[in-house]
Length: 235
Image 1: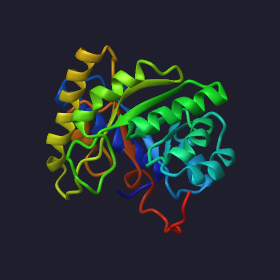
Image 2: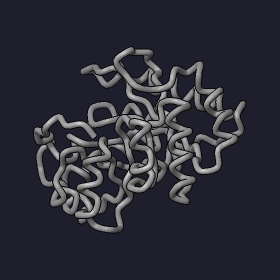
Image 3: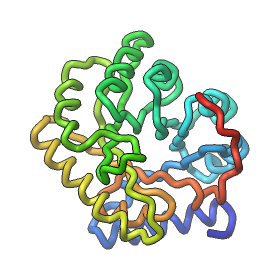
């Protein structure tokens, strides 16, 4: 999508508004997250100047380098795969973690909270599609993890996150977004967790995600343009 960052953002808001109208939703119930992987601090500042306050990073190492160089009033979330040995630093750097994909990681985040004195809101990442190449909890394992969460003091389960299979047609993602919402409704009724947040939808399918109940859409390319190349280094 061409134009300035501000113009791209305005068009995205228009499209979210149209998707909300179609679904009978309030546009204020959808937050735009700038997925800022590989974006330099000057791009973060440009986005912030245009009103974006919510940013998502994929790697702890990149967040460690970038967050101190960015405006101090921004909200940073961890949206990439998180290794348990990085849990403490992730808790220190990020307000929320979207990618809790195992009971072991949930316990590690809780332990990190005990060490740092922080309560960390988290999303459980759900592998709705069952793809072996994707991270995430199998749906049948989620009730057990929610039960575990009841005994933890330093994590707060806020909602669910998913990534559908890659496909050119955005409509291909709809059954997976819908299934996550349906699973959320089931688990909410049975577990007592409100699970109000649904983090789903990216640059190519965010309108479908909004129609199916997304409360946070993670937008990178459509906001910033094509990503810069980055060396493939470990966290």
